[in-house]
Length: 369
Ligand SMILES: [Zn+2]
Image 1: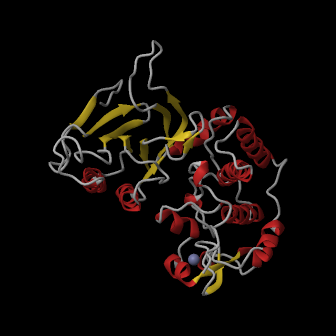
Image 2: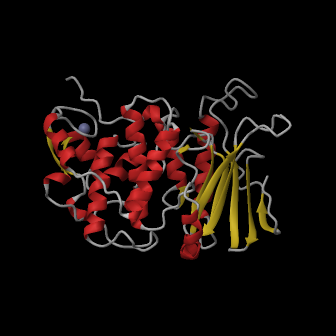
Image 3: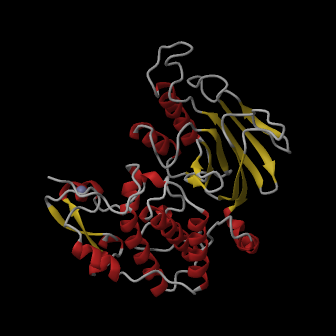
């Protein structure tokens, strides 16, 4: 169900005859930031019609069919009017247990046009959601909050927890910056520096938890993140030098930093030279022939993203340190995120949402053969 304070227009509860009924609705509503097109979806879960109902489907089949037709519909929408795709996606993002194939399919359906703003572990519930909101360009989200699936008088409302978020026009970010910085716990980076620092702060939190073998983030871990972010932004803290990373490169066994293979190794530039990456040792890692050719000239984060992989923490640390160093050296930390500038790394792929703690690793395990 879609609800708006303002009237709806162009409402279509069918979308495509290829979609099952009752799982799709699209409409346009006027808001204080202009008209917005909202696509409501309920993507069938893994076992839809597998052991219940028609019992004629394989696991993920209904899910996959739905995404295929949804992708076609989305690709036909003109995004000069901002679009929000919202509802039950029945997938955790980043991927946890779902097959790579259906995860890839969902990423392809959303393409580069939509950003999922509900990805990653949500700090107040310490888990990932399967309900999501994906926003087209010009839109940005903040103040993501969850609420319980049980009402105050203990009535069971839903198997899912609820989500709420504030959506703004990305162009209006500057006028809302003051408001955002007052509210420290809800972080929406506005500049290149803030984006890199927020990622590095999340990395510091994850690194602390992983090295302590923690099974969940504690208050202390969240405090490490908050302090690091404030310290980096305020200039009272800096990222540790790359010397520690270089030391590790010397003492760890020589292996592909992407897959752990020990054969057919060559040197790989973490920031591709084509994008302006340097030839210095800091920017060079070991990679096997297979990873090297699969990655090609693509940025490493974009390449791993496309495979549904999250980089090992120490690889990400090197990447973020290089990125921060580059931007500091070139006076680019204060540049607003919306501005287009040439960078040797993929700013759009800098992770703000990390996958669950249990899936994070410091380094790719070295293979035995
Ligand atoms: Zn490899």
